[in-house]
Length: 306
Image (tube, rainbow, N blue to C red; front, side, top):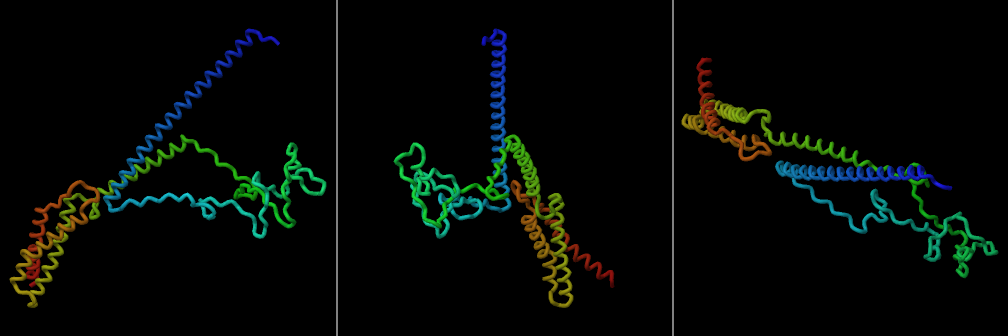
């Protein structure tokens, strides 16, 4: 059979097209792999930065890093029967004798086809195999003993049926899922940072309004104590000098330092650079004016009722 020039040229063009298509496919696959490696490196950098930022947040709120989990030993997972561990090779059932088959191969399964017999009703074993002249037959098991069968993979659905293999995951889909999870982690991290930059006491208030509220609350508490001292002075438990000292200096100083400590303990964010302002002149003015004003208001009220 002769091939014409036109047929030869058509075959050459077909081979050239196939070769060119193969090269294009190889180039596209190489580019896809480069893109996948670049995406993996980028996600690795993002996850590393997120881990460092989470460590900083944990240190800011007083949470230590969890200890590293030790790797399992070389003998772990053998014959334990626990989930995730490798079971040991099954042994012969209780009461069965140990087979005396040589180490050249495993014992035959029960019900397996045997070689032609030797004439006495028994299997010839290896001696009965073609091309194995001069080789002794496998020893026969005594009556009543069960031959061991090779283990088979058993699926959860049915006994003796091999389990179906899991389909390979698409790396592009997995990378996209990982990127979305990293974006979600970034969003939650930003929310955590915003919450960490707010103090526990009146988090939505400004620092000035928070300081005014704290100093005013401490001054009001001191004003209540002033009223108690005034009542005690009226019944003769406290003299006039002690009452004046507490009203003019003692209780205002106690209110001022109480507000200062409250702002330092609960008015400071978990993550802040430096010390937040406590507005000491404003607090001093509020406390040393509010307590005497409470005493004056009490005197005016008593005189007005009379």
